[in-house]
Image (cartoon, rainbow, N blue to C red; front, side, top):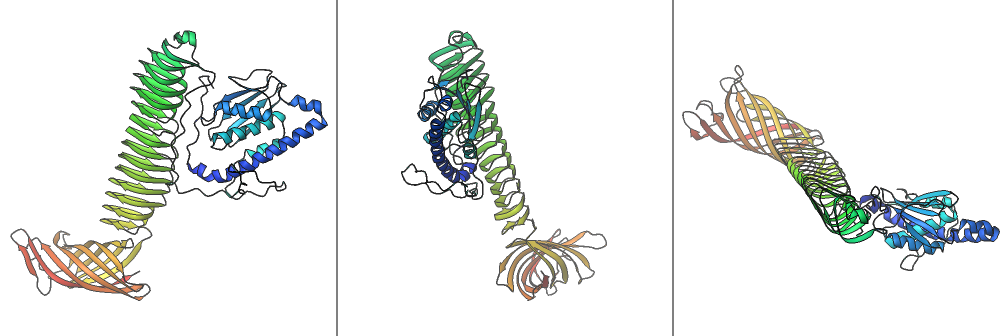
Length: 602
């Protein structure tokens, strides 16, 4: 439409998950539906003329033709091509009109937010009928489908079939039609169309990346085209004579300007408004608004708004409520739709089928797929998030790729890799976790000081050392790495000492009944009366374990120990002597080989 309050709606991006799922079934359904519509329309017209000639002629459009009002149809549709297709179908003249006229038969084509279109027909006798259908992505086939529906609306035939034609294909294979099998409609290549297939499940989100949006039209039927226009205010300047339903190639506004479209360059010190489209560039110190699709660039010190963008916006605040295949730059960026380019700013927000790159202080992508987010705080809520790099990363989608930050949270079914101080994965880790603290439901590789694997390995160990230390503890971790937490007592020496241990280790499976563990542990020895530490022990050990029962194993192996004491008397812990590594007035270190024996309960 040319009116400022109605603008074309952007077509859904090609390649979106919904399109990927519905295209095969819907395409076959449209071809079959088109054939049935033609057949029923021809049969109905013949029967109506044969039985009641006068009534049939009254239902046909008058000699003056039918008006067609295009009210925000997707920009992939050429209004003139749709008009010509309807004219061929009706066999009467069809004229594009800006609005419906009382007393004249009028077809109104309206685009819906989900990509479908609604066609309504108002006859001269005030009879009105309306249908909503899915249309193919191909503009020619879409025009043909709309023309077929227009013919049935004008003749008021096959209403039930038209209603069924507008339904979406179900997820499961559609039930058999009650009508007798009809000859398959010919495919565009000349062969027979394949029978309808069951709708496929949604593809993996990473593969369902949105294609760049279709370019907006750079012309507006019914609008006046001028080379140059200049205004101080709307209707104060050249718009006083030309009006606002004008497409300007070059436009200059002092305080505010209002046009239907821009195909070149618009400059303004205040606010620039294009009601239908913008193809080119808008520069303003205040705000640039394209109430329809925009292609090119909007540059403003204040606010840039476009209903759909396939170029770039540069300003303090950028809003593109539709596919963005270029870039937005500013303090705040909002693209409430698919974005295949980049957002650059302090705060970024994109809610759509796909986001490729966001760079800013805070990033939020509430979509089915997010490629890369780079910022201090990142939030991706959708089916998939490929990579997040920032201070805090949160991905609440079905799958998460790589997260690198101080704190990482993957609240989905799977996470590829997390690298940070604190890593949390509420689902399964497919790759690895590396951090100080790691938590996962399942993980094959979690390496950190504290690893908590809810569905991982959990063992109860009891072991003893040659130095008289007897320990009991838990071993918890992933398939290949584990943490060890122990408490015990040293029973030898001049008096007993309390012992606490903390360790990291790795496991190598040697079959169903045997395994090998390589561990590194630290022991802290305390005086039981004062709880003050008196000595420390660092131990590296290699253990061989064998299951003697399904839930019990014995293990043992060599170790090497290094003790640290506050005095020379505290360091010797070996019963058969040790090698002095360092002894002075403040510290004593001694080393010796040892042995570890124990049992493990599964």
